[in-house]
Structure formats: structure tokens, C-alpha cells
Length: 125
Image (cartoon, rainbow, N blue to C red; front, top):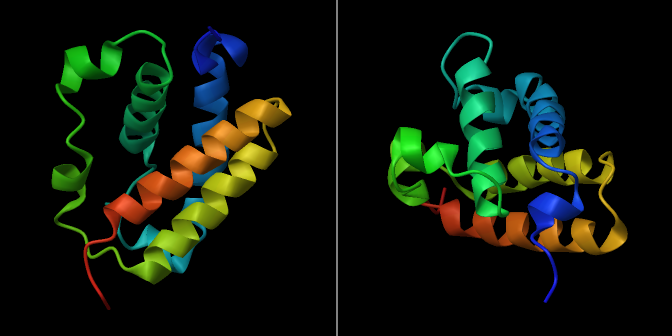
């Protein structure tokens, strides 16, 4: 059996850096930035890094602090259509490509993010 992706990418720091790269793109994207509150996005960065860390086999800090992820429920207040999905994937895919993940891990991450992005679409607009 293969070890968790969390271990294969050397742990939590990988996800912190991935999320930082992702949000660097979000901060300058007019389509996505309007979905976030004003400010530096530090809370959003922290929650996403903790979620990904837990999802991929790391410590369960996210669950201990926030409970079940309930991704669709947490994102329900935001209109997420194909445009938002596509822009989100552009930035997350770029973050994965710029990461130190190996080829197998990149495929695993990319497949998950594409599926998660599709799952979050909640409007036809």
C-alpha cells in the first residue's frame, strides 16, 4: 500500500506553500477576488491548508477546529458557476505545477482539484 500523499510530499509545509501560491493568483483575479471578504485572506489560507493537510493524510487539526468540512454548505452563499470554477482551477493547477510534488502526486492532486471544483458549482450562470 502506498503511503499517504501527505507523507510523499513531506508534510504540512507543502500544503502551506501550495495554498500560498494559489491565493497569490486569487488575490489578483477579478472573478475570484470578489467572492472573498476584504483583507489579506489569511484565515482562508489557513483553513484551506489545514483542510488539504487533513484530507491527504496529515493531522486532523481542521476537523478538530471546524468540524466536518461540509464544502458545499460552506460555499453555498457564493454563486459559483463555470467561470468561477475555471478560474479557481487555473490558479490551483498553476500552484500544483509550481510545487515540488512528483509527477504521480501532481496527477493525484490535479484530479482531486478538478473533481472538487466541479462539485462546488452551484449555479448555471
